[in-house]
Image: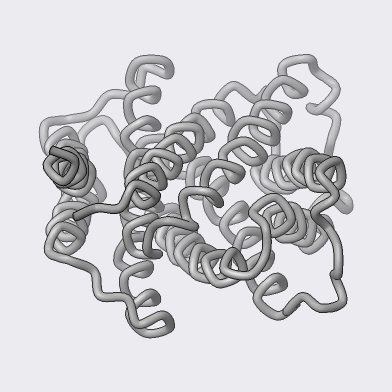
Amino acid sequence: MQKEGSHSGVWFVLGAALLWGTTGTAQAFAPAGFDPKVIGALRLLVGGIALLSLALYRRELTGLRDWNWLPILLAAAFTASYQLGFFAAVARTGVAVGTIVGIGSAPVFGGFLGIVFRGERPGPRWFMATALAIIGCSLLSLSGGEIAVDPLGILLAIGAGAAYAAYTLMIKGLLEKQSPNAVMALVVCTGAIMISPVLVNCDLNWLLQPRSIGVVLHLGLATMALSYWLFARGLQAVQVSTAVTLSLAEPMTAATLGILVLGERLNTQAFFGISLILIGLFVLVLKRSVVKVEGTV
């Protein structure tokens, strides 16, 4: 029987993933000449300030000397690495491919890390969803036609997926002892400090345009602060492997927006690959919902 907390946690993670799915599309609206590294750094900075303000308002940042700072530093380093890898991958290979390969590869890393470091035992649904994701990402990455596949972009996306899985592992451990608001505020703010050197000697003139400000605010407030707030609460109730696999809702959102909003076109093989990832997500989520409903009858 699926516990209520775990079931609600699934939907928190899905909500976060849907917000993350708008990230690549938002970047596509940035003016010409933008730097992906700057976009990633500013996303962390704005999101970190918002999360820190919330934690301070709720007076949850107490006893910092008693915190275990190693996982905080590691989580911050992983989330900073994700920003650099993801935005660079999207810039090189497009919103649909960059996002789908990045997050589509994360369940493999997440499942492995959960097994090794937390003793988690993913069930058959996770293995099925992950297998479908791997096949789907392979079909998408190898598809020709109208989507240009950049090899370096694919590698950057896979690296971003690994960083995301490792970040999730670190956050899961921190949430067992600290409040979600405090954890996310410290991790994101520390990540922003780590990534801030990329802003040195960068051309920031494109940021003076109103459209740039809108993009940065959306990325920082919606796809960082709000989404991480949701993700932390969901992660309290689900396993690392499950949370990472549920994040496959992100590439589904990104691919849909890339096609409908940006006019990106997928050939038959790429479309089939996306469909497999979506089916895998349904296998994981819908089966959980059925178990929950049956358990309450």
